[in-house]
Image 1 (tube, helix red, strand yellow):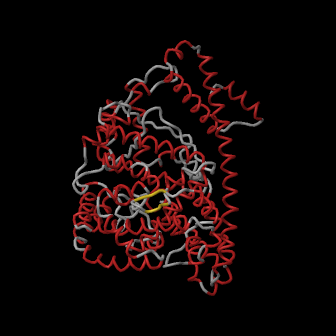
Image 2 (tube, rainbow, N blue to C red):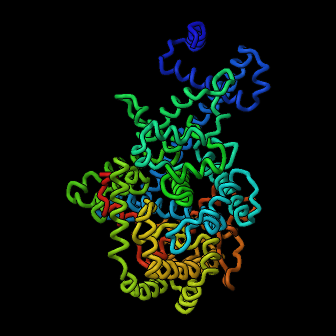
Image 3 (tube, helix red, strand yellow):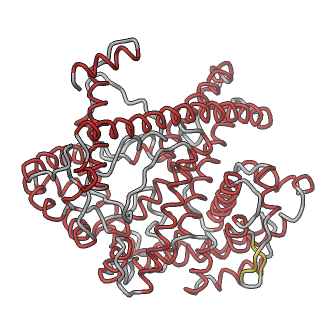
Length: 598
């Protein structure tokens, strides 16, 4: 900033500016100058330097005001969420009782959050079944489908390929991604929108580091859209400037942003604010440039990158809607409340602060994904490869032991008073591919359409040839198809029962049913939303589906989204008793707070 400008600003605010603040103003004005030039080069050229600065400053001012409003909104939302969660914790502790009732209630709350996260994930994937069908790998997942993937990416980038399947897949993807972006922003996030089709850009850090900065820069420079890289005066960056810019981008990517950390400073941002002030820096010159980069320096496949994005954003949405824009702060408050309230009893019974050997912190870190952030990415990938190889070589006969899923299916059905014959018929039908697709569109057993054999893999999606081999083994041995069919048949029957139950008021439900749903976080308010939905028919059965809930007129979108997430999460959670799978408590107890890459 010019010294005179600094004086004017300091005079207006009544204090001295720090260097960080002046640098921030410079960066913001510079960004908006470049954006002005990119949007309309001809108009930008006709403006005087003073007019350019004035317009950029005005935009910066509007952005600053919006940013301040967003921060205030987050504080208010977080306060409301904290009060609501503490009140709910207190109420549940009084009901649950025991040696450490507040810890008991806290563990229940964490399980509820996991149910909601998985429900949101199922809802999101149910909307992009056409996309998954178009680009998923073929032949047991071993081989990618390059022709279909290329057509899909072309369509996302706005190029008409004449391929109706790719066009339909692209439309479904774009609509879902935009819907999730808008919903995330309503919850407290501040995600911008690209002016071209969005596809994730997962970078393979190991390959980047192996290549080195110079080689990586030489490769990526020709496939970038140079029209997006401008100076403040509207001129295009020359090759030297581009190489300098890409060198800094390389450092940021390969250090996962640690190169920007200032010694002594601790990151205190909320989950909702993690994308603030961040803009995509790598802009490819089209679909071919993107595909070329993904083939050489991308992590995993395009398909896996898309899945990872859905996994991440649905988790963020669920946690923010349930716990406020800063879920970690809300968890800290709940944990401290439990510690304070149970303090006397914990002296006598210290083990009561754990469940299955896991502390609340272990469960929270497993839930929010922080344990999946690798300490050392290359070491984590090598370990993942070893696990994949062990899966493919040592679990080839696991299907034989899974015959016991039939008794557990019967037990789970009996527990929920589901008709045994109907459950078995739905299970047998669910082995067909058409049934699989139709159930997935309802948000049921979506593991069957994504690369997530959750019985043996956790949050980390398998990647590379070892991951493909592990997935192929699970499919070739029929274990994956068997497991998913069991869960799918149970889920369809369960959704049909809930449709019938929802015609009754909450107060007249069986006490056992109410208790079970309350343990999963389903409230009377959620039930009231379910009651407003008109069940649709699926294979001759009435079903309470996400689509029927979305069709409710006059209902609040936030309430409908919550009701959908909890419905699918509840059914998904119960289906894992029909064919046993690991829940959040089992994963937390196994990991014991250890992080990937250690």
